[in-house]
Image (cartoon, rainbow, N blue to C red; front, side, top):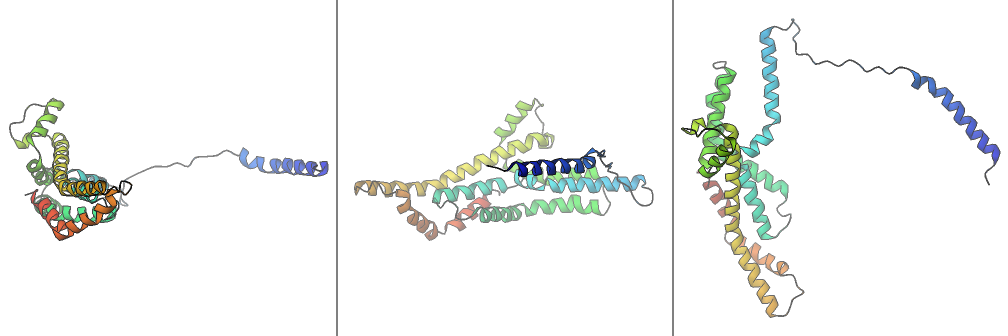
Length: 255
């Protein structure tokens, strides 16, 4: 049994501790004032405020760069095709996701290089040289990207989003709103990527069917066909120089 004397000591110590710390918590807790100002040491004129807002806008655009890279470039089609190749080979995590994403990023840079060059020539450099205003720079900068997306977008997908949005039928490509073009472009990229993936799957599917038929004829029903077909699929992919053929065909789909 627990000694009553020890219990009294613990209770007394707890009471003294409470009486000691209670004044500390009884004090008023004040929240510090927080403010956000954009100003310059010399008083902050209108021109300096506009410059600060431009810098803030630029930082916002940079924060959205990953989404822009994925949605309005060739990245979506490339990463889907590369992922389907890995699934067709049934190698699970080989190549790793980091390798596939890195390859997709550099292929995107390679494919989009002419577009970025046009953006730099027509919009970024004149804007940095203070030859054009911000609104004109944005208009010029988005035009090469619009042209790229229009070349890769199906008319059927454009018509779908135009009908859903309730917009009037555009007379030419320049009249297509950007909020209609981007989702139509993404759907077109998904469709083309899955079409390429289907063509890639066919030879590997044939290997799986042949291996499964041989194992069933030999009565080896408990042996997974994927375990046997995997080396043959890798061998076939290496013999036909699969990565070269896939990357070459994938890049040519954007021409």
